[in-house]
Image (cartoon, rainbow, N blue to C red; front, side):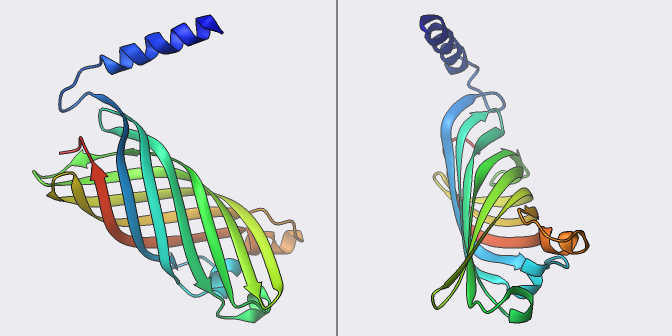
Length: 202
């Protein structure tokens, strides 16, 4: 245990003494983002997508835990609310709330003195909760998210953020093989606006 602790201290010391210039630096908890917008946009032919309206509002938060140069690794969470538009696809429910959590990795690239682009990839584990009166339905999915943010510095450490993300989800549903593709492959677009706060981007 002492050897492991010593190695961790040495590794942390090494990272802390890395170069501190514009292109190479190590930092921890370097940025936080909060956005809101729409989700379940342009869904593929799938039960979840066809049964629900576009989700509004959707709230997203991202915390960068480790930053090296312009690379970020962190955690994200997303909460969106969808109304059921066609009960023949989904059953007699009013709405579905979806909570997503998972890690993400990103890389930001300045494109002008005051703006940058940040593409990212994320793992999305999602819980879906549907309800109507006393009836409840719970389901889960595993997903891959591909997104890009445009960020414009508006002063200090604050950036106005516009983002798009496409999500590929695999529902954890067991069904007849003839229905599996329709039930389990749930893909959609998200669009959002908000703010990013960072101490070391531009």
